[in-house]
Amino acid sequence: FQRAFEASGEVHPLVHTDRGSAYTSGTFNHFLELHNVKRSMSRPGTPYDNAPMERWWNEFKLRWMERHPMAKTYQELVSLVEDGIQYFNHHNRSAQRNGLTP
Image (tube, rainbow, N blue to C red):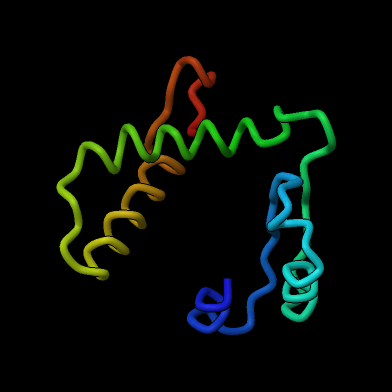
C-alpha cells in the first residue's frame, strides 16, 4: 500500500478486505486513515461477500496471466496487467453474464 500511494500521489481509494488479522490490525487501519481510504469489509460468516472479486481474480490469473509469456521486466508486467484489466473490464463479454463483462 505504501508504494502504491507513493506512486499514485493523492488518491483516496476504496479497499475491500476480509476480516483477517492483517486487515483488522490497528496499524493497518491507522495507515488507511492517514491516507483517507474508505474501508469495506466482509460481514462475519459471509464468505460470499468477496465472491465477485475472487471470481474476477481467478479468471484474470487463469485466463490472462497463464496464457501470456511471463513478463521479463517490471514494465512488461505493468503492461500485461493493464492490458488484462482492459480486456476483462471492457471486452470479455459472456452469455453467462447476460452479455456483460466481469
